[in-house]
Length: 136
Image (cartoon, rainbow, N blue to C red):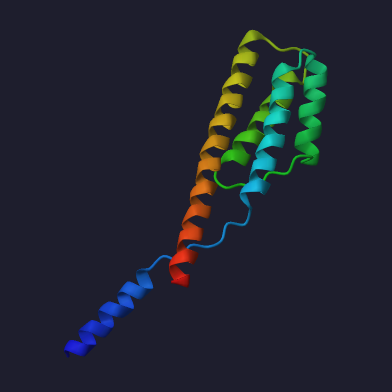
């Protein structure tokens, strides 16, 4: 009976051990993606010509010229940002309220990118630690 309890406990501990999967993006790939997304967003934020802004945002959004592989919610925030620009600039005009809305979407996307960067770093750290533990 005692052996059965020990065996059951061992099975439960083994079953509950979390296996960390290898992240599908390297840190370099993710950093490259983030750099490109931030460059697009920065260009859009600094664009003075509303028609050019609309054309750029619509083109990037439609073609997915800058692909985004999500770690968390950063891609949704980025595409919502692009979509909001396309929507608010479609008539060729941008009010102060529109600018504030775009700015809020921009800030949200930047925050989500930062969260995701930390998340992928943690995923890689956990994966590497697990590999080191397994090799001992």
